[in-house]
Image (tube, rainbow, N blue to C red; front, side, top):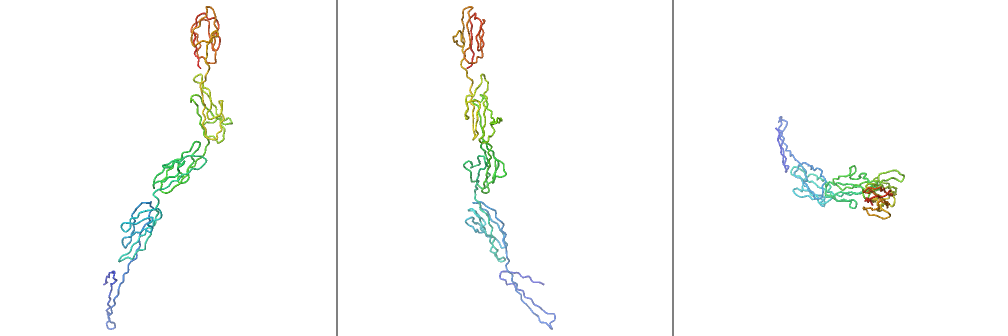
Length: 362
């Protein structure tokens, strides 16, 4: 039958064994006491990896060991601290690398465990976004806090979603992103989980010509290259190319319009040659055609607009229009041989009192 022994701290467990021979003639009885010594076991700490944090963040560290509770201490107190029960509350106080040591001192059955260190990075609570522009064209980058332009960098709270939009200037096209926004369309969206930088690329298409008519109904403007090829006036023009502008006055309402001058282009006729060495605006200024007054001459005497002619019975009176105006109505109200065209001289005698009217535009 066996004997069960229990180990304890004072290592005082012993076993005495007595041997009784079956042949007592040749053998004597014998006994022996054996002491059993039980040593403490070794142990290890199970302490997982720690994720990166931002400044001001606090979390509870966790680790286990057979010998009992694990104690945590910071090896980098300038970056992170440990407080609370067994130092399990870890607080990030500055940027840098934080190292936390897990220890277990052992007990009656377990030796002290080897310490285990775990490190993580403490990041800033804000991140910086830097933007730049590149290429032959030009434009502006806009986001919350950014107008680049002049203000091209901004800091954001960690985790902020930032939308960055590229606005090309006139004559320029946006051609894509490099850096943090690479592969995205316009606008670009960035999650601020680290410092980031991106560049917007702009391509110059040409100088833009803006043409206007004043008044808008006075006429139109057409464009062509110096070789005579017609082109839309809205087309971006290559630097130092020549554009020929032609003004076309409208003829309605009667008597219509005529070109009076150009603004933004040096010419006194209906065509103007323009050198496209920058973005330009040209206006064709139109005015209504103006004619001198038209007057009625009766027997070499100027008459007013409307009146009566009195001539002797059977006599004659010579009527004619003078001036360069346009008369839209030439009427002698009562009969007789007299008649009139514009311009011209009525023929035949005036046999009665005549009335007349003048309806002319100036």
